[in-house]
Length: 74
Image (cartoon, rainbow, N blue to C red; front, top):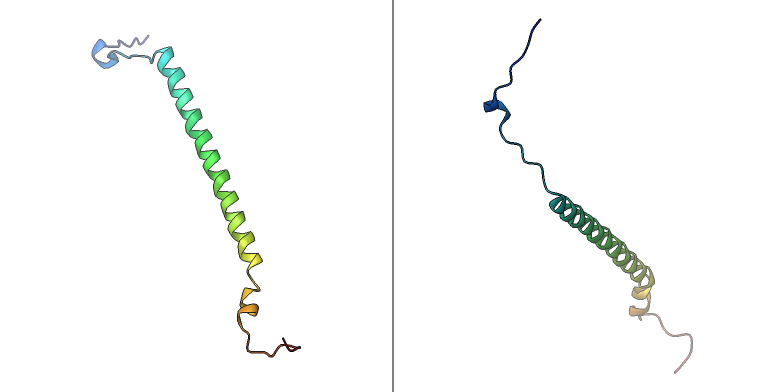
C-alpha cells in the first residue's frame, strides 16, 4: 500500500476571498458589462443615424449642379 505525505511547505496558506470582496467583484463586473452593452447600443444608434443621414443626402449633388437651364423663366 502506498501512502503519500503532503508536506506543509508545498501546501502553503491559501486565502479564500471574503464574501464582501466576492460581492464587490460581481457588482463591478456587472457594472462593466452594463456599460459595455450601453456603449455598444449607443454606437449602433450613432451608426444608424449616420447611415440614415447619408441616405438622405445622396441626391444633394444633383441639386448643387445647376448647369441645366430651368424649364421656366423666373
